[in-house]
Image (cartoon, rainbow, N blue to C red):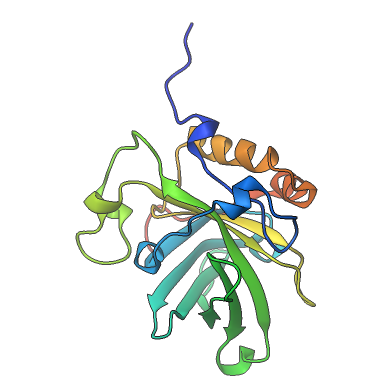
Length: 211
């Protein structure tokens, strides 16, 4: 019996992190998304970062700034009922030698905190049903964006281990076939650290409605 059609792993073009691997055809041919493509709100649906292991409703909103900088605002809640929404904000500056990468510095009391992260892959799931709720970057974006996905890699810092995140424009996340395709593509990279992180990844829960 034939399987239900779904995105093939070959659909997902994903590079290894430049900060952990030698140049390969995958990394040298990588084309990052336009800044306007990542603008708006994303739902973190899967992660290997311990920071999110006991959290829910993790979102990241990107706002464009002059000089190619990007402001991000991360919101999250503890898993316990009635927990308050907490916020982390920072400014991202692109390094000159790694397209699709950013150096992050916190704002406010987190100004001393820094990190480095890279976009490993991005795209739109083929054949995914489109919805007005798929947006997040502005009114009416849903039909234009379809079912966008983004994979990011965070380098190790003094306070956090290296990790990967999978983002979706939708609260309910990507189709399971897409998640598996992304994981397989990541695991097939010539990057042992990334394969290890894929094995450590877990689902980040989101409430069905705003609490």
